[in-house]
Length: 336
Ligand code: PBG
Image 1: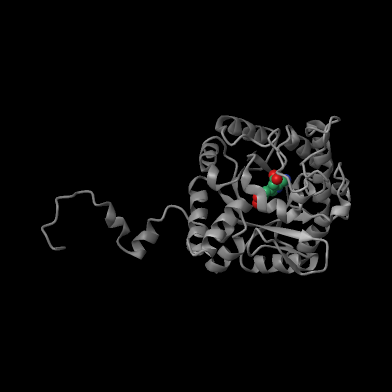
Image 2: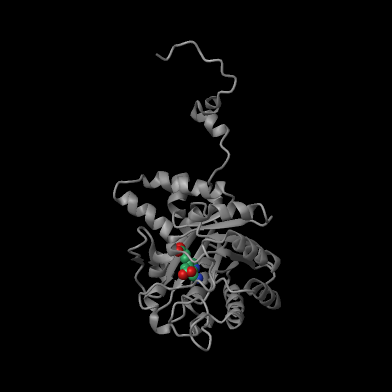
């Protein structure tokens, strides 16, 4: 059976896969704890952790818990957290006024994390959707039918300066307005914040994979539970050329890192962008990607740890240097 005369094969690719040691020696891509950014949701109440039903294992954390969570992540080797506020509905209005309150939830959370884990890189979201009663990422125009680009950009620049003053290390505009990276860079520099980085959500698509995130921050309920159509600012999932062109503008405007979002369904965008920029690339494995793997694993259809690791490897292989992922803590624990 197995002992017939060997074929005359000069090339036997399987030689490189014959043992765990050889496989480790020739492994081309790795996910390490240095690659991970952990997203954290913060709520304004006292309850330590409020589960997000559509994101198993993810919670909205109180200010106190967000600080201990950051401290534990730091001890596990995770070096960055991305903070998202769950603004109480009574503080939301059409203009997202709360975004510019220097003592708002995100600013308090930044200070709490910095106190608990001073070296942790804190990333803050610059967009109005956590603060607006309509759930859009910006101010609506006079007709109330679309987001007003330039008025929104001015607001975002002020937000970025406010977050940097609270201690944010990386401000991350997630809104997709035109010109906001340049405006934010100028505003930061004008405020003496030359060392604050801008992580641009450079190629962010109008994706249906954001659903569970919108549950978590309440932008879906703010919109009356209806699907929020953001197609006048987020990218068309069908358009890779447009995506690359838009992403490269963020580099020209002064972004320090470029992001592609979502990750798994957009690996081609990551790979193309990798060939077009020398900046570090970040991929956001978004809430729907995480939830889908969890849901299948819950039914016993997939092995969660295995698909988690494989999905992250795929994202790195496509060209990402860093990954924002709800799996960050679990991966860090498995690597520890
Ligand atoms: C909005 C924002 C979204 C996410 C991060 N920032 C959702 C949206 O555009 O509606 C989604 C992240 C995720 O799904 O995990 N500024």
